[in-house]
Length: 353
Image 1 (cartoon, helix red, strand yellow):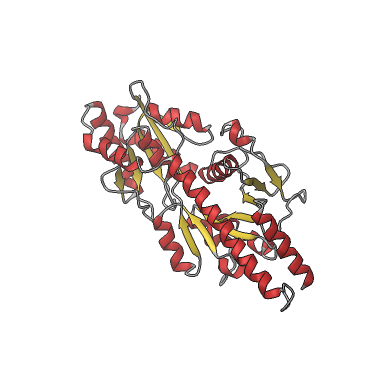
Image 2: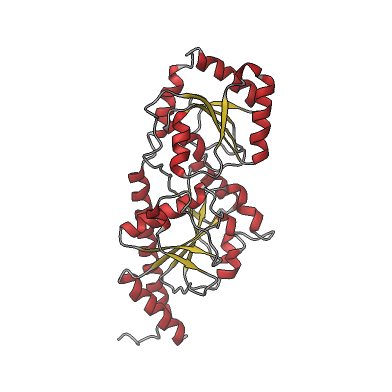
């Protein structure tokens, strides 16, 4: 008990001296762009800019990083690897675990730090948890997610978890092109085979549009991604289990209309008026052909563009940054109170007199 008390006292001292470390466990996508990984780097940058000691945490030494698709200001953020034994945490520290790393919770359960789940894709939550086990079984009490729809879903499976919504933002280079739109269709699907099915079906059903080109949005840098969206006349999105829907919002920021399949969990930004949504994926090609005809005839409804602008204007970098900083400031305050209470309980009566 004496050793435990000493550890808590040391942790409390570091908390009060702003010496906490905040680690964001990050998936190695082997150089491929991923919105979830981008969020981790964005949070770390926000925190570092405000003087917090924040790190990207990864499992293996051969972690490829994000230099191929994110700017140097992100790629050069401080990194720590678990494999090298660099991770040393105390009661004052925080480890942020993505929902896809449920299997890691058992490994870090006995670490004295605070564990927080960052849930961006609800569909991965149960994949890595043992049957009958939830986050609370591993000492997790708090979660961050990206929208109210996911928060409501989380309540149904983890009712005791305190979930906070932090809405994402998008870099300023997601903007309309200054040049006329090209007869190019940008396409992003969860499965590569779905991309090819849509492209092949489109040309078969619309031979009059064989001169229209498709741009597969996989494995390109963020800036090239934004440029392609800005230049295209329409984008296609199919991701039934998306938790937020980054791609269609990025498309709207570039004033490029979206033809998309409705996801299972409808995010709170999605409405019948801000894109062309279909219930059945098999209808995507038919709707896309009709859209191309309207675009060529300059007959796309103006209210579609108006609704797109209204949808994306609520997402701002300043708002996201303030939310992240406020959240972790509150977490540090809460942890300070927890450690003070624990120390008081462990301190023998009369020891402080």
